[in-house]
Amino acid sequence: MSPNESPEELTSLTRVPTETEAAPIVEALKEAGISATMIGGFTAGFIAEAPGDISIQIFKRDEPAAIEVLKNFKADNAAIDWDQVDVGEPEDE
Image (cartoon, rainbow, N blue to C red; front, side, top):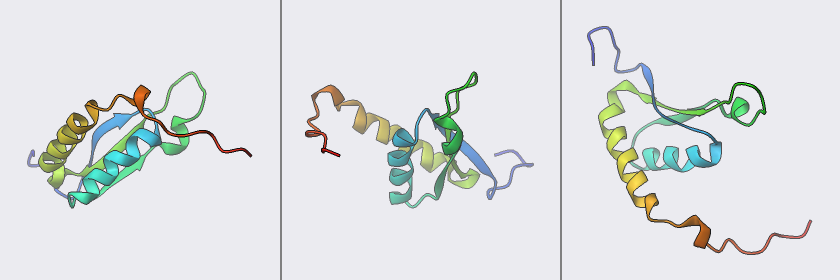
């Protein structure tokens, strides 16, 4: 951290295209005791010339631990073949 940065300053840990992808990452961070939030959810779903992203924000002081949590999260979820997951039949409306 540079001398001009505050440990209370927010920083972007990562960006993902949807809230569906961001929510489990935020939950994993919170389970590890790291405060995290998503920014950009309202704009990420818009169909426009400029695509939106969800930014997962953390405190600068938590960055080293958050990077480790994110690395482990990605490794744990890389083995899931989502094409093989049975999510059941859609409910009738």
